[in-house]
Image (cartoon, rainbow, N blue to C red; front, side, top):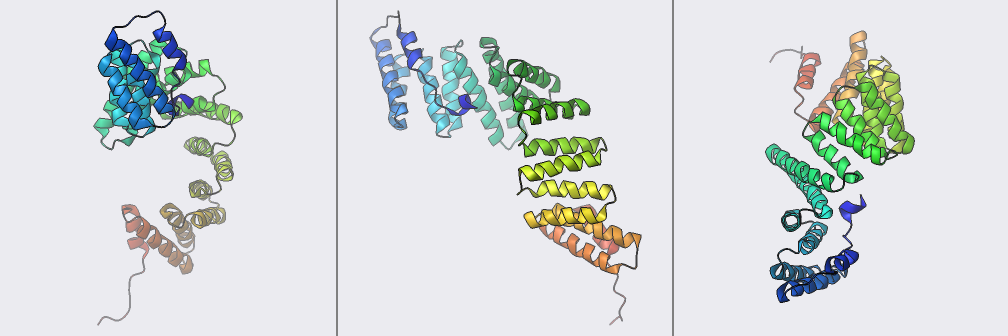
Length: 339
């Protein structure tokens, strides 16, 4: 989204900020340092800009716009921890400015994505929710704030609130495909499968080229037992992203459940051709061959092909305990002479 990645344009805001105001010597100097810092930032001289902005807030600690601009620079440079500190200072200096609140929420979300510890992720998401709620009070009709607030609640597994703010986003922008997709995912998580399908289709009507969404739609159809519909969705996903092996893995799984073993094998082999390290595809090939052997135990060649595929799958991903048991169960026992 443009607001999340672009540099904040502040020229008009500066004029409005200065109009009708009088400052002491230090406060006036702070504004001058801010203006110089903003101009330097616009020309890519970020270190010099940060130095000017630091002087600006030293001269005038209430100059929230200078803190916010420093936050924009840090975020653009990928230093999200420094961005967080700057935006927090901006929000403290001016609690009624919408943009720093919004950007602080974005920064918390970024820090949550970068975190590995579950407790840290939850804490950053809770902080993001808190600041997005403040931003939402300032500008209730901002689409991105509502959508991001919904996403945070979803990750915190508060699905009712996620639904509430996703619907609020859709009320603002009814034709946004991502909002419809997100609402579908929320419904899916609540096991409201028909509602989820409705929203997925609404999103696809707006933007047909969404392979990940088509994969979600296929998965929902599988949960309903509608395997042919699922195959159709996965094939559309494969067309939208011809390099994706996962769609073909799922197509193979659906054909196998329909006992269409030749079609299942073809799909799994297509997945392997796209990704030679797909342990799931090799596992699926093995399942198809072993099923043929179980149905006709004279077909020892099918058993051997199954074991070969399973060994490859285990080489790619050894921690498949159930597959290890199957390999042990179906591997022929040596019956030659004892030494």
